[in-house]
Amino acid sequence: MNYASLKTAIESYVENNFTTTDINLFITQAEQRIYNTVQIANIRKNVTGNVSADTPYLTLPNDWLDTFSLAVIDGSNNYSYLVNKDVNFIREAYPVQGSNKGLPQYYALFDDTTFILGPTPDSAYSMELHYYYYPESITVASSGTSWLGDNFDSVLLYGSILEAYIFMKGEPDVMAEYQKRYDAALAMLKQLAEYKNRNDSYRAGQGRRGAPTVVTTTDRGMNAEEWAELAVKRIVDVSMDAPMPLREQALAYQNHIKALLVDYFHKVAQSERATIKVILEKQGHADIAKNIEDI
Image (cartoon, rainbow, N blue to C red; front, side):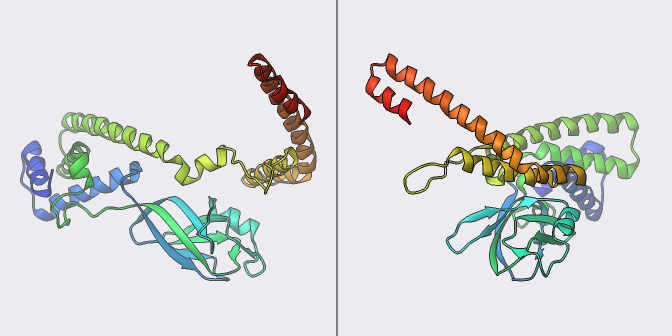
């Protein structure tokens, strides 16, 4: 559906003619309501830029709507994804910007146009922001259409009709009927958006945080002590969102937690070796099973 057909449909449904200014207002209000309600994977973009040393602030693009991911890129083109926090967390964790420097690990929305990073960058870094944006409105698009117009015109149409009826102070029962149609179309759009976002969860860092990564040295994988150290660091990191008493407990007991995790990791490894040994013996590989037992 292009702009001309959308305008005609709105006037036909509500049986009224409007000025171009009013029609455009109905449509843009509907677009904003939709984009603020549903995060659509198709309406994301990447931008790269630089942050300077000793500068904890990062300016947002003008069309920024919400963040999907923010990463620091090092000289070897490795990505370190920052964790989104509340601005008060960063202010509390890094109270003195000049003395709390390093590779940024966290970011927060400082105001409508700026992120604050923590810690303050100790050097100049390249950054990549993957974000949801406000697309060009169908009312001004040179193509005469938009993503919603091409892919989900029903939600745009019913949203615009609702705005028109609100403007006209229309009959409540008629508005209720179009509200139902709008809600149904919006629910379908949400289902599509949620499916696409689940499939893309790794890009946002969700997959990385939940799934173990095999990290190796030149001749081995990580041992139980090293995995326990990583787990404890993650526990302490998560506790930073908790009230101060819980944060203090997490810090105070981290060595005890690590010792407990090491013990359990060893038991898990022993159990897995025993299972593999039995499977190999049943398949006639007693020699390999003996080697597994001796590890």
